[in-house]
Length: 111
Ligand SMILES: [Zn+2]
Image (cartoon, rainbow, N blue to C red; front, side):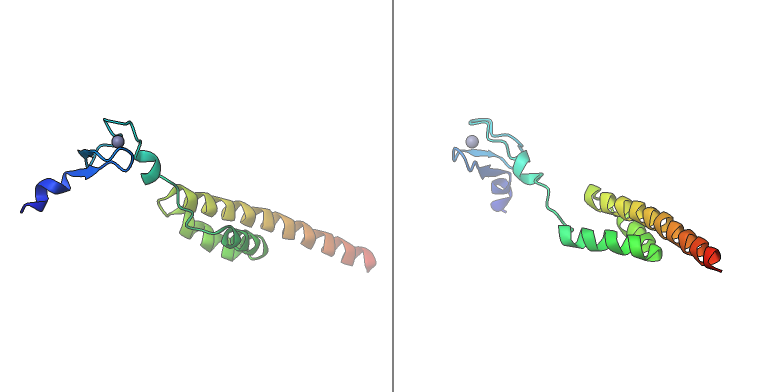
């Protein structure tokens, strides 16, 4: 195949010279291709994160499920969202636990 040799090279977007396909930096002009390739792409929107965190806070089982699903995913962002969901779940348990105790004290005091 003639294209096999062509696949090994590409033209630099900056200076237009043929460079090796797998080279990260253009040897002629120094254009760095790693920046473009490694640009982080947000997979989870900010709105979704807020929904996850609020759900985790209100319903601890939802937080546990969301947390475990995302924490076991490979990419760092999912892992972060999973960890935050678990943190909000714990905060929710503590918060609703305190609310429950306060309600119990109020009810007992009013009897
Ligand atoms: Zn170049």
